[in-house]
Amino acid sequence: MSIIKFLKSKVFFKNLILMLAIFALILVVAYISLSIYTRHGQGDIVPDIEGKYVDDVLDMESMKNYNLIIYDSIYTSGEKPGKILSQDPVQGTKIKKGRKIFIVITSQTGENIPMPNCVDQSLRWAVGQLTSVGLNIGKITFQEGDFNNVVMEQKYKNRPIATGTNLKRGEDIDLVVEISSDRFTTNVPNIIGLTEQEAQQKLWEAGLNVGKKEYEGKKDFMHSRVVSFSPNLSSITKGATISLQFLNDTKPSYKTRINSFKVAEPLIEIDTTTEDIIDNDEELLF
Image (cartoon, rainbow, N blue to C red; front, side, top):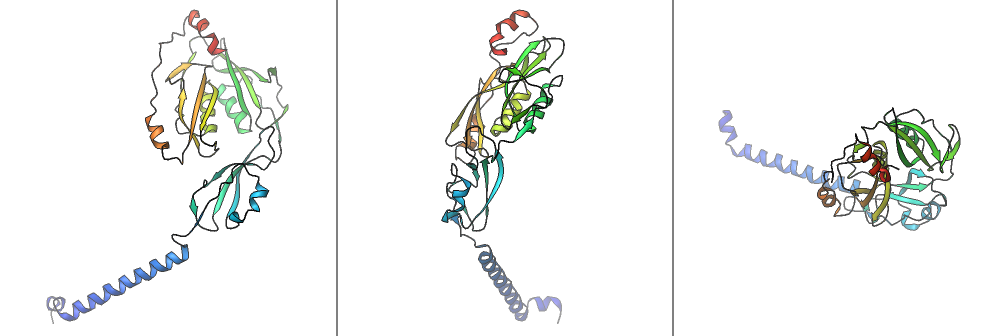
């Protein structure tokens, strides 16, 4: 029998149908087995554990099926240790038993951190050093001089602080920075969609101060992200203060908000080569 005649024969079509049926059966069995193995469609609703303490959460019946993982700890002055500041997945998420829930808690101890040496270093380098060891920037002020963007003084609570002095994690350090007369403006960095920590670092590195922070809904260290800032300018005088507004990135309106925010152009053209402009902007600078 030729190949063409065989392909047209009833025997071929019977075998073909049988093979397709077996293949379909294998797919169905595999799908059912996989669903059983992964518990497809099953899961519990993650409870709200933010604001509670780790020891209390571990005793909750609704948390018995999950693994609690400490993602990070943050020292907060005046706050008891072990308080949950943020959780991921967030409240209301449906996940399967045995999954991990990552949390950020207040630090168990306010560990001592030696003050880095920021004097005679660039502003960007100083910000990186301070934030990497767990310190924050309190206020950045500028003074005109021969150098550009070089830290001249480091202060703690309005007083000079020596390198190596022990501080608690999360304390604020003020920086006095020397700048040349033609470098008094800076571009506002793109901070839309960043977390609080990420946005602050970018602003500090640009020589800008962080002002009022507003949170729509509950503050969340992992999910609260910048959706707008004020003043809304593309460039501004160094030392100016930027206010931030945050929205949880799990909210339905989050993507619309970040996509709708448009950075405006400067309201005036700032001429930084004249002493008059420096005097007029003194309030912003200092």
